[in-house]
Amino acid sequence: MSEIQSWRFLVSRNQFIDYRTVVAPDFMCQANIASLLAKAAEGDRTNDDTIYYREIHGSKVCDLTIIYRVIEAQARDINAEIDGVLKDSFGREIYLIEGIVLKGIKLSISITFETLELNHQQLINDYRNFWEWVSPQPSILSEVTILEGEGNPLKYRPVPEYVISSLSSKSEKSNITSSSNPDQSSLRNKFYGSSLLTMLNQ
Image (tube, rainbow, N blue to C red; front, side, top):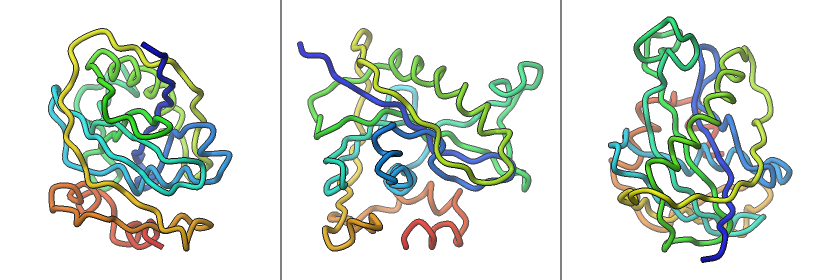
């Protein structure tokens, strides 16, 4: 079996900054398309045995596959002496949309819970850094790692493919080829403010 290269990513918010791409692959940051992940990664909170699978077509770097989960941010990840779910300045629960980015379309690949947990531990270090931000900064770069496949594969929950129009490659404006169902847009509607949604879709 050939080695599979992957890059970690994270979309979340802190007390002061709304949902955005916190961590993105180095090649996406260099191409100035890190914000694409905040647009494409969406969905309800996932169960322990389920992950989202989404294909991104037409990116100016290459076609991409994102595999991710949506979980509650835990206060103990920021301060070991505090329990419960992290909340923003309005008292709303904060979610982590975390996973991996693969170059190309990788439908046949299997992802395990152990892989996501290892990825999570690396991302939490980045999130602690982000927690201190009071104004937007460039996304934190993630470097390539070799995907480990040991463990029980998780179930995929496919999301309609995300297709970027060739007419808008400079700004990475996008069109969804399949109509999104309410479940897939719920995280955006619930956790992104209307002003941010407008910004993401510009």
